[in-house]
Image (cartoon, rainbow, N blue to C red; front, top):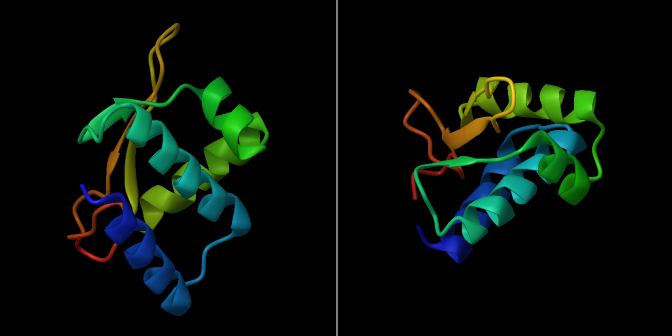
Length: 102
């Protein structure tokens, strides 16, 4: 994955699509977490880490994750008790992290 291409493509996507600010900040947060994970197709993104890095509340992270998934920008599998949820690239709509196909 090319980090700069992802950022540029997401910015371009945002110019023609609307997303709430919470979803935008969570997208950038997930990019940061995935960068630390060395660009895996799927990776763990604990709620507490997502909250701390994004500044969103627990419910804010939940709503933003749902919004990103609805737009095909990420996939999300809730974690089991004691395990972190799993994030992934956009699902099923031909969109990657950036929805721009990079």
